[in-house]
Length: 276
Image (tube, helix red, strand yellow):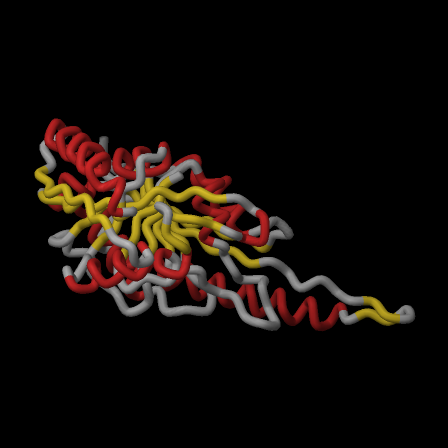
């Protein structure tokens, strides 16, 4: 398994430089083609007593068109000399942006995006809900935080939970895990479950060994919150990439990722690969 097509989502409002740098590096590493994608929702005219604000909608559409054009230029300028085959896709759509990107992901092996970006109190038209995207896409998602422009793959970790989503995530991450050469597997849970957790992470390590990936497996028993413990552990280890399963439900937007709240995985200090 390898990544032959990368789908990179550009933020209309943000700094895409680091995102595109990592995309270019991965495309070179795997000999992959790259598809750039950008989207926004229109602001619909509001009518009151026979009068409409169509001018506002038209002005917004013009601004969005300019922002999409700027993203397209940025995409080609960043990648045209690094990647042999590139393609651009964009739209203004009434559909959720996560839904649009997920539908286009049929042609890709890996989606690359920033964190949950584009939202504001007054304007959700550029917002991509990463939780929705992870559940809908059927493809792994690599989240690149602002300020990160390299993925050295020297310190890679798997946040293990014995779920189908975590198993899918490790399988989807295999090209990156092979490139890293060594992976840390960590399961965090109650102290009374630690012995069973040791068996689980040992099995995962043996499975990775069968795919030529060396690993170190750890089961940690703690009475403290898993989120705080894992975040401290990853920061202490100067994590480059975390691999985790994504699962959840739509009620109140309550998404869970590898048993850890979205506060860590959707606003990370390092790159995160999610898979559902």
